[in-house]
Amino acid sequence: MRNVFNSISKFIKRFTGRMPKKKTPCSYDPSWVVNLAESQMPEDAELINELKKCTKVVAYCGCGCGDPYFVRPHSEDWVFDHNVVLEREDGTDVILDVMKNGRIGGIEIGEWDKKH
Ligand SMILES: [Zn+2]
Image (cartoon, rainbow, N blue to C red; front, side, top):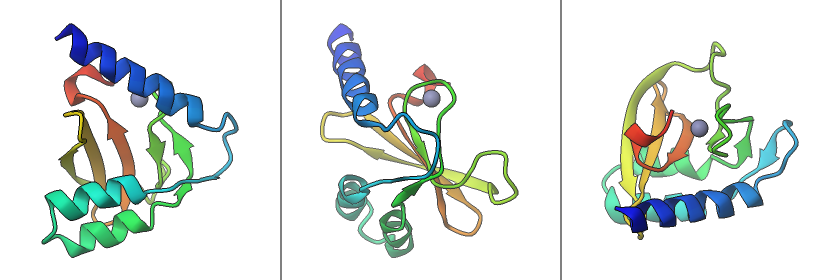
């Protein structure tokens, strides 16, 4: 268990370290999560297509974890529908917030119940 925690916190540190500090929209390269979806949910072409559009971060999670949002939380565009959980190569969960219109609102990394 300790190893799992260590690798997650190491990753989160690395991940947040790469994150720009400014709050204005930043560019994002979703190719890593597109690859996960293509290998784990190849039948869900809509999801894969929406993930490819996740190139502009509009906000970061308020808890400081560095998770990017592509739809501003609490705005009128944030109409949450469901979560999709993918698994990163190291076993870490990658949780997608999917809006009613199919847009990806956010990508959260880490075990769901250990965050937020
Ligand atoms: Zn967070």
